Image (tube, rainbow, N blue to C red; front, side, top):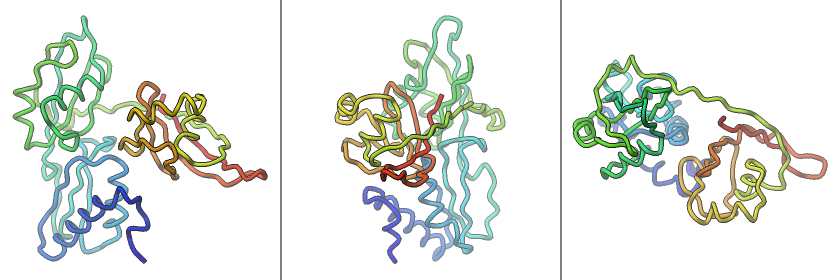
Length: 257
């Protein structure tokens, strides 16, 4: 039985990378530290490596509640500490009384520096507090070059990981019946839009599934998939609970409030 049958075809290159690292750790007894992984990638790594008692697999994104985390694959005799993940936490200072910044503003500033999304983790905005966690190898560059975010002049100060704030998320669950798990069908149900209105969002690259842009209306979703539509927020398929007498699928969704 091929391991690839458990994953979508576009995930195979990532699967290959994890298999290579896994074998490298087992054969050469070398640690492998990944970039920041989104939740779907973390799930893939756990599926491939998680049950192997010859290696030690662990994750950290700066706090137990982090969404994006680095994975450390190491020989079983290795004693892993938080410092092994090479994380740096910044507090973002800006004139919060006069201007506000949003998650997309922080993300845009970092991407404009030519940084890959995989090199930084969660962006946490809690009231007037703003924090950013990055891989230590880019920390000096980020600190020196992030001077504006949105319309705000900012400065970054490195702080202890123990000061990492928790992003408070509330998911509202609903159950609905749908004719299929096609992307356009599910988005129409989730966001109470006609399928005609959903299609432009997909074709313009405004829809992500498991943090990747998907532009195919007929893309087939699965249990556990996370979705986002720019301007509408995030949602996920919590469970597929069977079929109705009319052969429709009963699906439990979650929407981020």
